[in-house]
Length: 220
Length: 366
Image 1: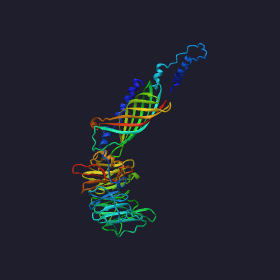
Image 2: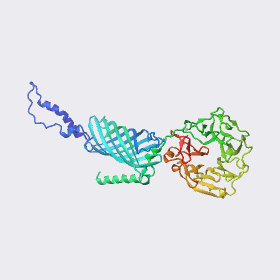
Image 3: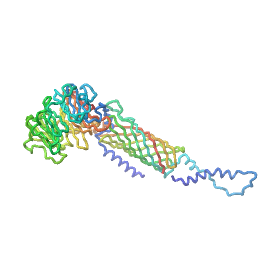
Image 4: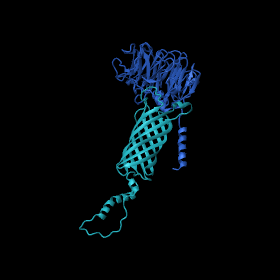
């Protein structure tokens, strides 16, 4: 984090009250201090005060890692041949990078992978590659983010597959352990529209999933 | 990122989406069509090599012999006179007796029969085979049962001899021309009034059991053999024509001299004819499954065939599993496929699809 100027200013903030006390406090035994030059105003400027609640400054970036559960929600239209559940609870992993272009506002990308077992014993693999926008804020030591993603997803089932549009939205909460690392939880809603055209338009479906994951953020 | 680069990226992803899709395959639609396969515990992950019916029961051969009533669902291992320590049985029936060839619990080859499914008796007049290591083949062609004895030659090479089972005894001598063969039988079939015996490299045929000769005209054989990938792999008959798998083709003949062929894929190992459908199981090492069509020269991938019902059922049952044999139970309108299922959970060694008079039920685990 490019924090030297901020650190100096923070130190100035901490030192300012004690400095002020020395100026105005006086005991009877003390001889009046010699007149000193007027000290510069070291009270924190407004933007520094705001930094205390939103420490994500432009130019900073972070890498996010997550691993957790992938929960199938629906496949619509629902044309199951039997009423039993067709997709089972699975797992999801992701790797992302975000760059703060404005205070608290980041742009970046994510590569993820999820797998779910099917009723017939196969495994559905979903690999989304997406562009991400997110807003970050903090109530230190806690950090929060909310964002959305858009991209493509590679679906693989047995020896066949599809590439489909992909949308994701979610929120996350972290605990800042060190200046570089944060750990927390995130949850996202995945929307995967599988679009077929022409004679195969009847195969069009929309699948949805929810992932709940442990996440780690490395602040650069 | 400027606007131009962003627009180009969006265009790239759009083109990738459209151009990379197999429009005819629906991922989510296929998942919705899947049916959970729940077969018998005895057959889960169990290789099954053969399936027959005998006096109201089905019998399946794997590492053990399994059986169930035709109207039942659960398969149970069969004890041979109380012994369950036998291995790798081969089975055949002429309707009167059920024959089994196996490695007995003592490690010695055994050839037995039963007339009631309960008491097993050793066949009489079994030959003395030098270096006998296994009785590793039982074949039925027409109404005749053949047995293959596996021994060693004087130079310690493996040799194979074909005998005939006559009721409760083995024939006194091997079939002429089929004694001490260098290659084992791939299969035996009856077509066009002849018996046909197939090894990996040779075809034998004869009008009667007593005389067995190679087809006289070598140019009549489907060939030439280019290498081990071009070997004979399977034999079948619809009673009129003979079908042979060779390399990646199916060869057919009605008289044994004039052959036609159609190229497909893989080693075509087994054939069946059921309700106007011709099925050919293949295994080319990288993929396996079966082809299906109205005739041997018009086959397509089994996933779009009628017997499987739909792609999702094919993908979760027989796709990717080498098929050892098909068997059509005409009396009960049920088609069986005995397979090598692999080691995944809910993969079984035996699947069946029933014909209700108008449509197939689709494969389901036995």
